[in-house]
Amino acid sequence: MIFLTPLFMGDRMVVLKDFLSTGVFRLMAKISYSVYLVYPFMFNYYLCGTLSYYYLSHTEAIFLFFNASITSYFFGFMLALFVEFPMVNLWKFLIAPR
Image (spheres, rainbow, N blue to C red):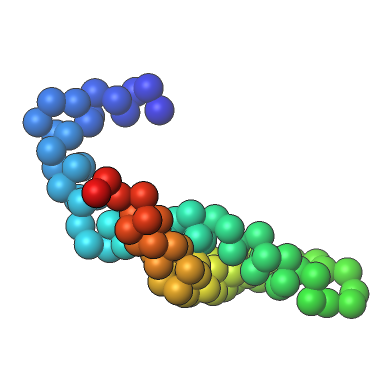
């Protein structure tokens, strides 16, 4: 990791900053905490949903990871949209200086 540090110094940092400032990454940054809260429940739901031992091949493990991730982002987006963002706005309204 330390060997990659010079690649992102100086003018090259602007390219990385512009790339990470796109709309997709902004949305992911806003809902990341909600996804962080939802992901363990989704992963446990998929793993604990069976009554037998769970043996995974590499393709099944990758499928399980992507399935849990996509579902977590969906439910994390819903949690952020209907709970987190309204609560933040309510907090700003109540605590805002008058």
